[in-house]
Figure (cartoon, helix red, strand yellow):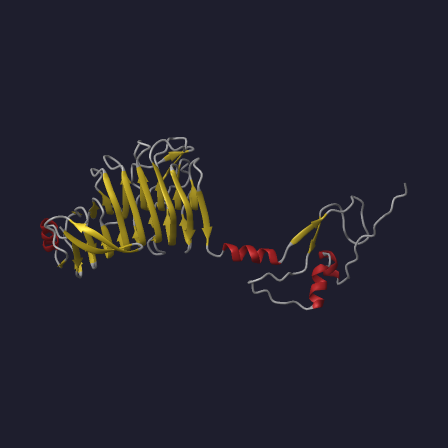
Length: 366
């Protein structure tokens, strides 16, 4: 029995190679790639760009790295405990670039490290597959068109388009497991927006948007730039898409949009959740800073008596602009005293250049 070393999302992975596997081999053509797969190579290193190959299946524990694989139909099929890193896999946009063999009961862990695709990445717990874990650190789906997919989850009267990256537990068995940790995931570009949704994660839900079988869980989904165009015809009442979509049956502890999420077309959402299951935390970098900036200038509403006043306050809930306040860690330009006085005036008095005089209180005799 031999041991091999490969990269995982969090560092190095030491795996056991199957009996008879060689440690590593470099391939430059489609025939060399096919021969390496037949010989039971533990790690396949692609040099340059390989074209003319049919869809390839990576046996259990095999790692693929380097170079580019260009297909015209389906791309790389994963089986169990496979790793892709520093590799580009391309096909036509409406095909799948990376997918998994659903005849394997336990798919183990699929690792993606610095992977770029043209075509969908579609990993699903379906058929005989009841356990999958996905770890990604640098996964970019440059282009994909998934509008023609038949399988689309339904809930609350609408269907959801699959994404350029789709992770889906389609098992009715509630004991099935699909878990993931996704870091630095980006989908689409300004020139080639993904047609459909961007990042799509889902469990097995019923038509009411409730979990009815196997769940999908993730502790983190961190996205870079996401650009999509759902391509939904105007007036379509029952179809939607999204940049980052957490569909029914999925639970995500944290969704961090580190880059811009841009969605084009009809019936699309930037980031959303479809379903009745709780447990999605959305957070975008810069939210805290924006919240602090919003607190710098506050609009306070004072309640005044219903009678008219000579000071220019009429009726109830008269707004006053309050002075600018300094907030820690926010670059607020200090104002001179005269500016502060002008900010305290009533808006109508500011326009007339008059000083602000508060309304005189009336004392009622008992």
